[in-house]
Image (cartoon, rainbow, N blue to C red; front, top):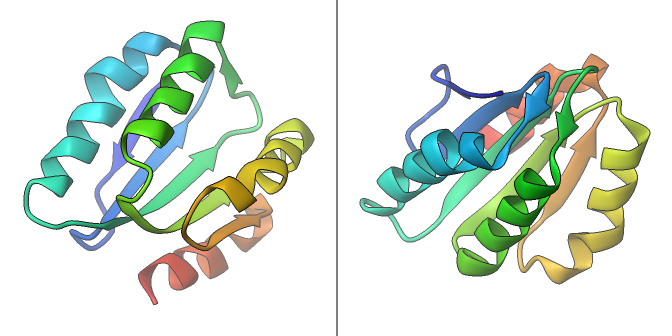
Length: 119
């Protein structure tokens, strides 16, 4: 499930993924929130927090890739907060493809990640 977090500035799209994340979560929650923010600005900042039990369906991984490709230049910076080793490894492996700063933070540094994404 993807939940939009509301305690961030308008130029930040903050989401939390918990449990099984599906393509529908992207289609019905993340993508509409992203496109809404992009109606009023060219670029946004993305804060993506993954709970310890977060998992992605194949469809969700495909939707994530499509969002990244479709909105490649829409991000000013991206913070990923997770203790999932496979997520952190994947983000670090593909960060060079993204034309903005991307940082991975452990869950214990959530406040630091929020300060970085807002700063």
